[in-house]
Structure formats: C-alpha cells, structure tokens
Image 1: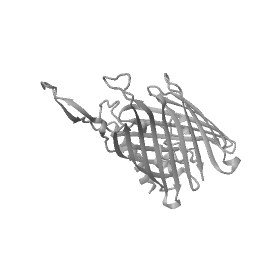
Image 2: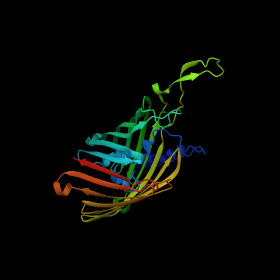
Image 3: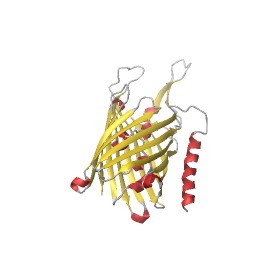
Image 4: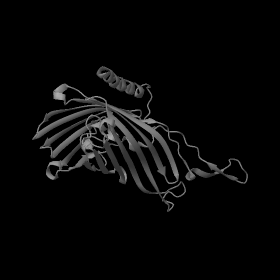
Length: 338
C-alpha cells in the first residue's frame, strides 16, 4: 500500500510537470485573473513563497490542499492582508476543520481590490468624471485526508471571478496536492507537490461592451448598436514541488529550511528558498529569496506564537517583500489554532 502511494506521488509530480512543459510556446501574459499567482500568509511570504512543503496552518488551502492535514487540534483560522502594487489590496481568509478519521475540510476566500478607477476614453483622456471599481475573487472548498502516517492527499474546488465596472468573467478550477513525510533526518524531511487552477477558461461579458458602431462608407454616417466580442482566456495553471527539513527542533531552538520549484504555463521556471529560526517555539526570524522573477527578490519577516504565554493558539506574522523599482510590500497575518 505504501509503495502504491509513493508511486502515485511521483506520478503526480511527473505528469504535472509534463503538462506544463508539453509545448515550446511562449505563453507570457496570456493568463487572466493573475491574483491567483500572488502568495498569501506572512509566514510563507517571508520565506520566499516556498510554501508547498512548509505551510502548517489554514493557508495550506492556497499552497497545497494536502497540507491541511498538518493542522492539529480541532482546526485553524487564518486571516492575511497586504497592500499590493499600485494601491491595490489583497486579502485572504481560510478556515480548516479537523474531522478526525474522516479527514480535514476547509473553506477559503481570496479577494483583490483594485479600488476606484477613473474612466478615460479616446476623446476624454483626462477622465470622463466616472469612476468604476474592479476586483478579483476566489472562493474554494477543500478536502484532505491522511491516508497513512506519512502520506496525505488533498483536493480543492473553487469559483473564480473577475469584475471591471459592469464587465465580468468567471471560471471554475481545481487544486490537487500531495504531502509525504519521509523517514530521513529523524522524520523531519518532507516532500510535497501541488497543481493549482486546473479548470475552465474565462470570457468577459457585460453592459460596458455595448458600443455604437458607425458603418464604414455610409453616406449619412449611419450608426447601429453593437457588442464587442472578447476572447476566452486561460486561468494561471501553477505547479509547485517543494522539500523542507528541520535541522534543529528542540524546546529552545529550531532551524528550518525549505526549497520549492514554481512553474506556470505563462512564465519560466522559478525557484524559491526560505529559512526560519525559532526560539522556544514563541519567536521566529525568517528570510527568503526568489530566483528568476522579474522584480521580486528577497524577503524577511518575524512571527510570534503566543500559545505558551496565554495557553491559546494565537499566531501573528509579518513579512517584508522587496519589489525592486516599486515600494516594498508588507503583509500581516493572524492565525488562531483551536
């Protein structure tokens, strides 16, 4: 049975990788709803987004649904918020419930608010006086189960939507993940893989696509109402393969490192590394680096676990993200484990 599960994990990794690399075509900039590429949770963000083999709270629903099985106790709730580029904001809420032998279930909501945008046209380039709103939304439901003492599998289905003024588009997607705790390094070495956003395409429609069309060559400049046609767009298919290990993990100190390969249909393979140093399971220093990104590079952060102090599983994390020519980004997270 264990051999079958190991082979299944390897098969999942190889098939996912081959799907993403099956065509030598440059698909850069061809995905819609790119909010789905932005990492959530300050702990993982501070560790360079090396999340699939690292995450251990409710944000696992974003990084690797199989990792929801790492949530102990009765469950976990996580909330995070980050001011993203050019005055936008990304918010995330996730909850995981431990149902014992039945497995873990979870619900998460990811929301990107682009704020109010002033409308401009060819004839009113300084603005028409009209302001419109824009946002992205993802709502997912996940199920994960620990099939053996070492191997877990998880799946998440989700609704994905994007809206700009009266124009909107939606899709349905699925995430799958696997998590394997090896016997290496005193059972501390972990291997994980996830495939995210395998789903339908999006196509925009709405009242703002209605236009007045002037018939070419018409002597009276005759105009008729018309609707603009939009193309279908893929949602970003993402593949993650990660490893992690505790090199030190005792009552006073912990030293943890993780590495992840991050691939997508519309950018070249990226590499993320992260490290975390803990003191008495209460205070944590973190750092990370991202390779082969256009702008993002290093990250750092801190975390406070108040469980020992107040007897309740309250965790607060902060991450600092460097973004080259843009201002640095700051992400805050709060998790409650019960």
